[in-house]
Length: 589
Image 1 (tube, rainbow, N blue to C red):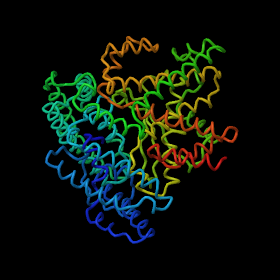
Image 2 (image 1 turned 135 degrees about the vertical axis):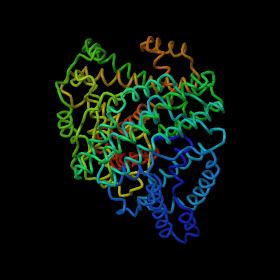
Image 3 (image 1 turned 60 degrees about the vertical axis):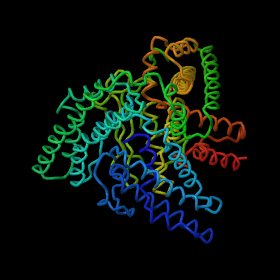
């Protein structure tokens, strides 16, 4: 679960024990330092797994094979808000910095450099976010990705492998009430100190939908179905399903009732509804969010200029495409053109065949793609991919919003399946598991700018595989890039430049966006700062690297070799990705 900003940052690092840190001193030579760096990262991996039940359960089927003692793990959704723990956390963060600084990057092996740079980026981000003036920034109740939206799908999709997992699941459901009450305590503190920024009406509406479904909700239904799928005696299954009913009735539903009640009681005059730029220290916080979301070390000013250039180029590309087929633009807006597909599975079968011409091979992908129940398909969710265990044996799972089956044949549906499946998230994660030997790199690096930017890159690349008019594909790609870049500019405009609604309406008018939808766009971006940057700025970072490589290599540029270099680092900051692509360019000359 994505927790408050302060805890999100610190939780990535503070699992490591003090004893493990102190052993790094007085490194005698390069080999010894390299050995101790490996031990440092391994210790961080083990302690991270042992300190967070959900992280351990999602990523490891057999924790014991990785030196992880699951008996040390508290079964809970996540850490609860605790003001008194902040000073202790900061002290531990400083000790971690002192330990990490004892490693000389120049003395490490080549294969350790990406890991070092990932850790350094994340550690610096944690330090930037731990300063006093950024305390209590960041909401637990973002309308798109808040805890209240994530908990239902998390529990509904949690893999049950054995009877102990069922017992743990029941504890998780029992933890929903204290967990969300902790979120509410944090939210009240934000109201007190002046950092409250929540779309109260939208959050209350979503929580009310969950409450209204009551015991018929898909979260409970899915959990009980997973219990039924286990090889247990029927009376044992019935017992556990009754316990899930009880926990859902006494913890899950009351938790959402508490959120509704407490958010309605907040003082609307103390709620910021106009973006971070209008909040004290808000721009500094946005700079932190921006860096976290993009994985880029570029300034906001530089990225903004690159986005404006992207908008101009995409518009020119669209105009060039419609000169050969004026109707292509209409097909983009009305969605009338059909790809010919009538089910998701066939799309994935074809994508698995098509992608091999442009991307490196991976282990056999075993998966299923299932519809998302209507009461969980909210908040604009089109689809998502559930992260598999690094030692997993179960099929990978993609969930799709199936509420409008008439759209299955649309281009948007095809690119969404490519984004989540092949060659998107499912494929990219499998490539990482196949080719990166570090469990820490597979599980502990959180660089959504890369992962979502990559998935956006391949969803647009997948247009090449469709048997539709070339001008239509060009228009669809150009307009997608155009609109995506504009949304990223709007995010910057609202949260960094301080746009109000009228300024957004003017921007929409100037750029051929629907000004009538400006108010809805404004509210969505205000209450979900940086939510779209990972996708759109991450995509742009990849495309800039690709364009540079193409310019350098000319006819020697190879699509598959470039994509292999792009995938090599796994999730990483773009400084690491760029280094691997530079190496590809140098070798290809």
